[in-house]
Picture 1 (spheres, rainbow, N blue to C red):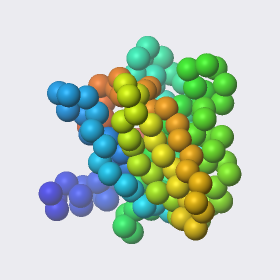
Picture 2: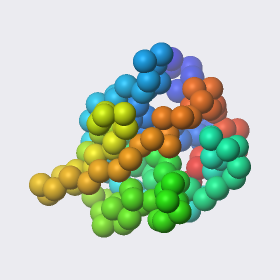
Picture 3: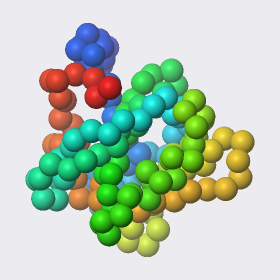
Picture 4: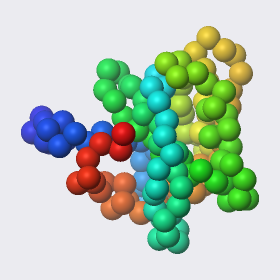
Length: 146
């Protein structure tokens, strides 16, 4: 996939950080991802359940020397500021964290562990489980989300 990676680089497209992979049996975790938080920004995105535009927070991270982004809705299902946005606000830019999706009963939960700290932050990943696979594989032509 060297050609594809080169094309992404030339088009200035930042790949998504994928914490889970959709299968016929549901979403399977891709394991722990040790990332460095570079910056975040408020942006517009599409709610995959309704197809309507919504506010999202995009996090630019670095994993194994490669820049990637992770997107979280600004508001949770309850209409309040999304739990992960609240918790990641406590993490300083430049800090290293471990992100991992885990199955807890019927829900997917993302755990966030800051390197050097012993506590873990969790958030409900159910909203992302409903995303369409073709949406996950879509490449935006408008370039870098940052």
